[in-house]
Length: 55
Image 1 (tube, helix red, strand yellow):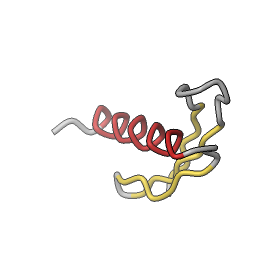
Image 2 (cartoon, helix red, strand yellow):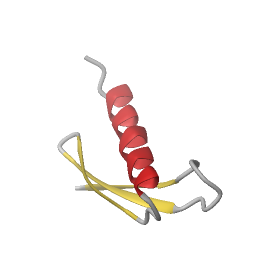
Image 3 (cartoon, one colour):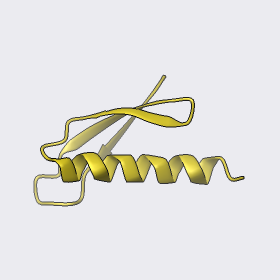
Image 4 (tube, one colour):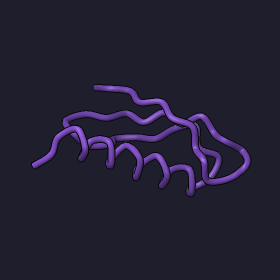
């Protein structure tokens, strides 16, 4: 399992997010203060995964 850390940029809170990734999938996101932060982390990490493993 891999851990990715990022900072949410959706609102002024700038939550420090942690995404747990395994086998090319996001398993969990923590540190988000709201669901927008959760969605932000999911999108960013999924984009990174797609860019690192092009088809």
